[in-house]
Amino acid sequence: MIPKTINDVTPAWISDALGCEIQSLEFEQVGQGIGLMGDIFKVVLSGDAKAQALGSVVVKLPSSFEDNRQQGIALGMFDAEVRFYNELAPAVKVGLPEIYHSEIIAGTADFVIVMEDLSDLKLVSQSEGMTALEARSAVGVLASIHATWWDRGRDAAFDWIPSMTGPRIEYVDQLLLQILPAFEAGFAKDLSADQLSIFRGFAGNYLKINSILAERSPWTIAHQDYRVENMMFADDDSNRVVVIDWQGIGRGPGVYDLSYILSGSMDIELRRAHEAALVEHYHGTLVAAGVTNYSQAQAWLDYQHAQLMGGLATAMVAGGNLDLSNERGQQLVASMAIRHSQAALDHGGLDLLASL
Image (cartoon, rainbow, N blue to C red):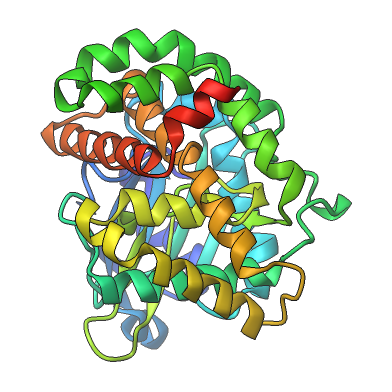
C-alpha cells in the first residue's frame, strides 16, 4: 500500500519499507513553500537496532494541492523520479541521497519515497543565493553526474526519459503562451521592461530554442531543476553536496543544468564575477571523468545559449500555473524570474529571440 497522506505512514508501514521493526514514530513537515510538487516530512523512528541506527528518515509524498498533483502527472514527473532512483541512481558515484524505499502507481500521483535524513547538512536559501565556493561544489558534482551518461542521452535504453525536444517540452511550450497573462499579473511588477520582454519573447519559442542547442551538443541525463534548494551542503571542509528532487529529469545537453544553477541560484553580480571560471570548472571536471568530445569553447557558447531555456520556463510555470501556497513560494518565484531573465539579457537573449 502506498500512503495517501503522512497519517498513513504508520509504524507497520514504515517497518515494511525499511526492513526493520519500528515501534513508534513522530513526524514534522519540512520545506514548506520549497517543494512545489511534493510534501516532505522528517520522520523520527523508535524501534530495533536498525531503527535506532537510522534515527530518522525523510518521507516524500505528492503535494497537498490538487493543481500541483495534476501538473506532476501531466509532465510525468512522479513516475520519472521513482524510476530514476530505482534504476539510474545506483550508477552515480557522488551527489545523491541514499534511498530506502521508492514506489509509485504508474501514471498517477500515488507515490512515496523514503530517503536518508540529510538534516545534518545545510539548505541554502535560493533568495539569498550560493556563495562562490558553494557554487563551485555544486558545479563539480553536476559535472560528475553528467559524466555518468555523457553522450549517451540518445541511447534507446533511456527512451522512457523525456527529451528536451520531445512531447513534454512541446506541452510546456504551448502552456507558456497560455499562462503568460497570469505570470505577468503576478510578477511583472518585479521585472524591468527588458526582463519582461525576455519572457514575452520566450513564450512560444521554448521548443525552438531547445532544439537549436540539442542539434549541436552531446546529450546526457539532466536534472532539469538544478537549483540550490534542491541540494544540501556539508557545513564543513568536505565540499559534500547532495542533490534531491529528480522528478523533472530529461535527456539533452548538460549545460541546461549548468545555466540553471548559476543564473537562478546566485546573486546577479556574484554570478557575473564567477561564471566564466565556474563554466571552466564544469568542463574540467567532465574532462577529468573521461569526456573527450566537448571543448571549453563549446561549453561556453552552449552555456550562453542555455540562459534562454529551463530557468525561464520554470519561473513561468511556477508563477503562472501552480498554487504557490504562501509568501515564501511567491518570493522564490520572483527571485527566479529576475535572475534568469537578467542572465538571458547578459548573454544576448534579446538578440537570439529576435533571430528566431
